[in-house]
Image 1 (cartoon, helix red, strand yellow):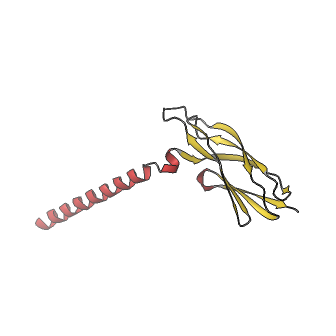
Image 2 (spheres, rainbow, N blue to C red):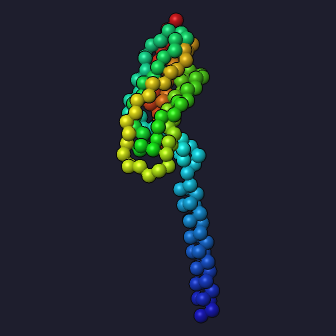
Image 3 (cartoon, rainbow, N blue to C red):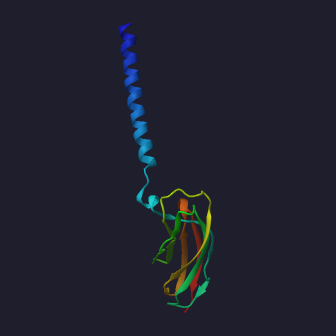
Length: 141
């Protein structure tokens, strides 16, 4: 009987430790990361950019998508260029922490991109969930 009692106690301790570890992991995974708490990428439906440009000619990328709910608004987009790639990140920011109706809110955003050097470029527009929309842009001298 002592053997069973010892195993039962060991089993309960193990279950207790596993339960605590599971609760800690769940709390950690539900804790909002800084970029998700107040800043995140939007859902994109449409990405439009000119296929050809002149060297150093600035251009606009037209984006259409949805905010996750009315507590979000478009923030300053991030534009990076290098190694034949233009990366655009259309950031959203939380404007209220008050409860809101859970409905998607359409948005349109025009992102200005500085002029590029001659050659072939890839435009990458990142959106929520790791999705990336790509377009080819040729800069002709």
